[in-house]
Length: 155
Image (cartoon, rainbow, N blue to C red):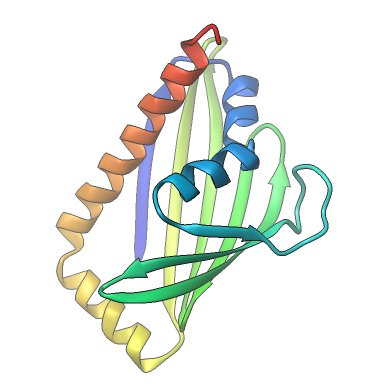
């Protein structure tokens, strides 16, 4: 199953890339939302090979996700591999400069089940794909607006 989103941000490419690769800030945001996040690597600075373990509640159970930054190509591409139980996800984030002060974020997330329970989950997600696509795009749009606001702020 594949989820896609595309959003335009009123900010230069290099500033957008710097903001979305500020992993310390992203970790703090996740912690504020109730997700337990910890680094599981020794990589210094943003680079391929960074990894995290995240714990969160989903459908009444605590889940753990392993997330790895597989590709880091400044200032245009990030690729993350994730695994939650038997569900693997590959997420590709591409940044495209539209002009000197405008950047497009393209995000594609591919979900691949590896166990029977993950297959059942993906099948139920496929049945509700229209609603899930809408929520996914809404969340990415909200993220883009928050990012744009942070980049406009003088502080």
